[in-house]
Image (tube, rainbow, N blue to C red; front, side, top):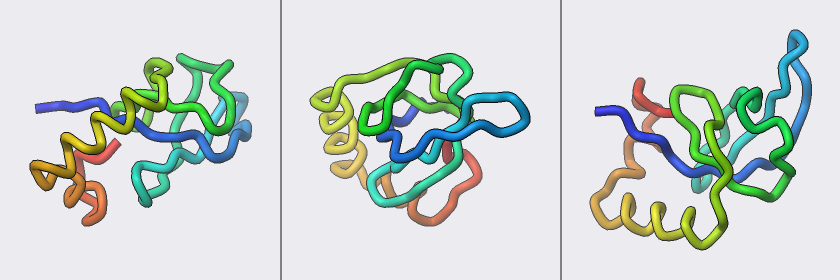
Length: 86
């Protein structure tokens, strides 16, 4: 099963002509392509799937998803570097 995970943009930059960013997934930071949401600003949240930010998400919704994942130990995969991590 594939799952989009909310993350908070902490840094924006360009790489090979593409908008990119560092996204924090509850303590785990990954590089993410921002081509689908190029106007996302540092501090905002997005749903990320396989390294692509797909849509903007408000902070309250992001926190609800993190709480849900935490309640079912779903954050362990993020922390362990599982291969299906965004």
